[in-house]
Image (cartoon, rainbow, N blue to C red; front, side, top):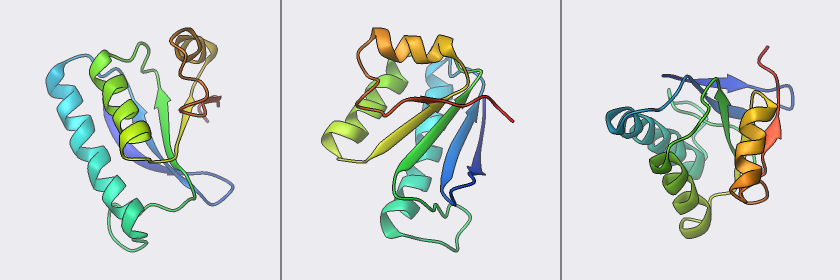
Length: 116
């Protein structure tokens, strides 16, 4: 798994996760990194390493299918409990269908974008 920041044409940023989060240790690394970006997002920090621009907190999953329950639970907590406006971008129809089947398309505003 690799985590980095990616900028989109609309000027907003996304946290790009490439690869599967298939162990609990990988989830902890994912969570720790996301929390650093979330802090910058909430503080509207535009100058630090973890600065984040955009109205929504975007997460871009690339070659990450399937997501494990730790990741889904963490994302649900962010959206429902912490009231973070999350937009999830996936790299193909398989991951899109996954979110559709578990009923989370609307909560996470899931969109498809091929990597490029």
